[in-house]
Length: 279
Image 1 (cartoon, rainbow, N blue to C red):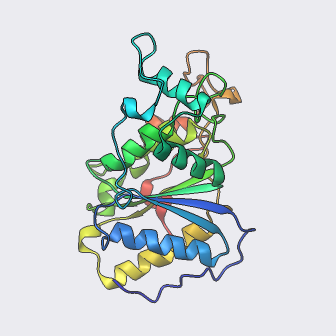
Image 2: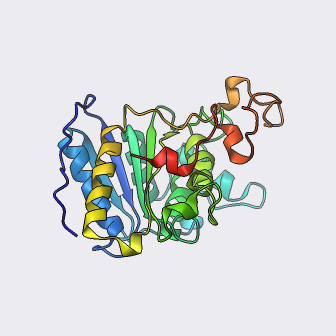
């Protein structure tokens, strides 16, 4: 697809930062790949330094196994978690995992570009998460989870394509709010390890995208990328902020009346997915 959407921001930007773009789609001419390319060009046009992990092009191994931990095979007493922690602390992770961890340490922000497959990320991206976010690197006893993990100080933007139309991802939509669908990644991976997630960007009805709607999507995506370091992140509650008891349960009365479900763990009432993603 082609468009006249600008690749360079037309609004003032913050000082140059470092951004890692992780893309997950098997087809180089896919909408996901096109959006990832646009993100790279837009960010570089704004003066940011960008590195790219195209997982399919890299032939990324998605499965965690003993090869990830040379000289530190999993044992019955501690299993994979202990082996990963030992290898992380010893600097003996497999080279591909170590390289991705180095990118995360280098980055000020991460953009995860992927299609929504079966209400989750593609297996190759899940494998990237499983293998790269090791015990002792992104989480562990030395870190306070949910706001104080090993990757604190960074931001992340999930950029998603979905085949269903936008109303299906609303409060009364059959798929549920997009924020709930993406909660395991937004809260359970990013926020647990200290990364501040932004409201996700989504292109709905992606299988029937016209040139006009594609151009509109790029305009919106461009604004979201421009605001990567200035827009407010999702206000997830910090575990250490006094809102939770020792069992990690939200204390009574901390939420706005009528709030329920996953929205309890944000510090403001959750609006609908359509409201959050508008503009």
